[in-house]
Length: 165
Image (cartoon, rainbow, N blue to C red; front, side, top):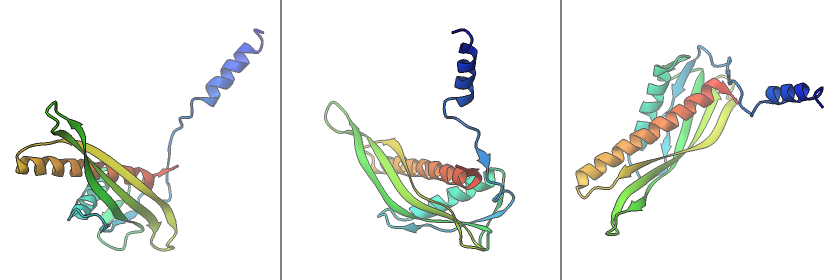
């Protein structure tokens, strides 16, 4: 029994728990990236501009390729499929205490020259924000939540561009 115990322990350590080191997508390293304004199928105006701004910020902030207005070697485009808010918590007086904003997007990452799709998928993000009786403060809280959602989506898109899954 003692003879096979070290072998079993080695096998367990080698197999690990499913985590692995992500490989950087060498095909995109040092290349130019074009970020197109997403189409907006939601009822929230100008949300596509916030997504584009935060995508540009994410790519400029991180290492790798550079962002160009047009003619990039890699093109990121997509559609905002939906945006909405729902109440998620209430006070003892049964008034809304907190809302949850949710945005769903479809993203396509492709090579310009060949048109080959590198990644295509649907991404969603949520962010909670407080309810407020003052309409201006309520709108500011929702705008902050939208910005955070766009930041999360931009990070997710960046990860799909630079990593092989």
